[in-house]
Image 1 (cartoon, rainbow, N blue to C red):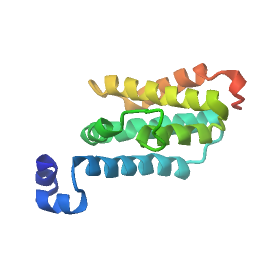
Image 2 (tube, rainbow, N blue to C red):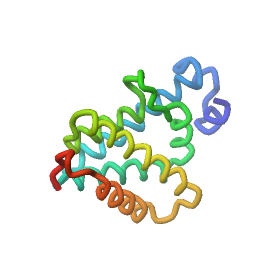
Image 3 (cartoon, rainbow, N blue to C red):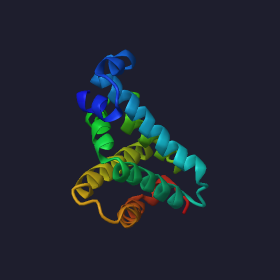
Image 4 (cartoon, rainbow, N blue to C red):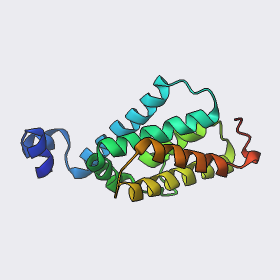
Length: 156
C-alpha cells in the first residue's frame, strides 16, 4: 500500500479510506481488469468464435504487457478456482469466454477454465521476457483453438 500511495502521489490513509485493506484494493483492481477485458471484447466485433477467442487473449496479454505490476498485484488475490467460489476474476473471465464461444454444459465450462489457466500460466512465463506481445497472443490463441474439441459445438 505504501508503494501504491507513493506512486499515485497520495497518502496511505486516503487509500485506506476507499479500500479497507490490500485485499479490498486487489478486488477492486481485479474488477477493473475484468472490465478492461470485457470492454475490449465489446468494442471489437468478432467475425467468428475463433476471432472472439483471439481478441480476448490479445486483451488479456495487452493488460499484462502494459501494466505487469498491476497484473501481478491483481493476480495474487484472484488466482484461484475454488469449487465453491461463484465469482472471482478468473471465474469471470472463464464465464465470459464460455459465453463468447457459446460453450455449454460441464465440458464447456471445464474447457473455458482450463483455457484461462493455460493463458495465465503462459503469460506468467512470457512476462519474464515480454517481447512481441501480439505474436505471443496470436500463438497461444491458435494453440487454444486447436485444442477445442469439436464435440463442444463451436463454429469456426
